[in-house]
Length: 372
Image (cartoon, rainbow, N blue to C red):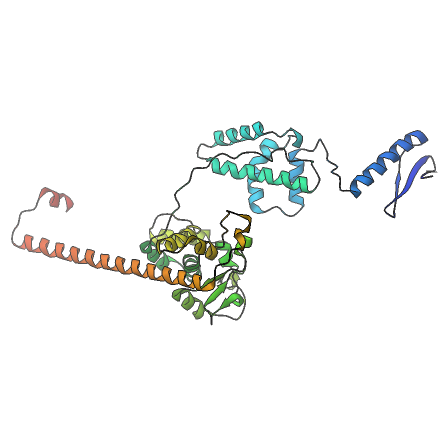
């Protein structure tokens, strides 16, 4: 018998896969205890075969709380939850529908006219991600928004730093930020990749940098040849180990204040630090580097097939791409310098003519008087 009465309550004892289970039925009536015991065996067997034991009453707010408590939530998840929870927190997960997601989109944009569809898409992507996580954790049986279609996003023009703006910016940055800017422009690395780069992963003999830590699997440990100026800057500050980018001996994590100050001092238009990565890609394209090589340098997969991430670009192709980049930048700087010399010469000629005219007693025009 698997039911034994202890005191006035029946206890259930049974074996499953050689493991002894015991639990109180909480019932003093044997027939009621047998019904409860059958339920206990059913639940234990369901756990044995990993059958989902979903709570049909669980709300999205409770689900989000479990997601955060699991320790896998990233800062961007928490950011978007600030907008998701006020709308979905009290809603049962089983009642989430695609029309409800569209209603959230309308309300989100109604509160702020400047919010674009791309922003709301990021919100809904986090919502869908948490629901998929809940399916994996067997908290729900299926994702009700699995086939939710996102709004089509308008392509926005990405800011590209010109060579002239680059010179002004580098003159206005502090030393550690100067190295970060040059690294971004000459390697296309992300800000997080640059700030996590280790000296141990830079081969000065081969003039090669292995990315220490990347946002994507495709970018992990990729090799990037060093340009002449980046190699020189790194060699001047070379150490045997540790973080490459440091400020007062501490790793650099936030550059918002220093970046904003550099832009103001340089008196150039506002660009994001991430735009330096786009600038690297655009310059490679202008220099005639093939897309596959550009993607390999930047740690991107083509996304065209499952096997695209395994495409290997040989190191000589990468070195040739960096050589083309340096040649293109050099040509742009020479053209810029030539244009400056022409402008200076034109200004000097204009000043000489203006002075000789006044000395000869030439009358001033209305425009000249107004300018004075």
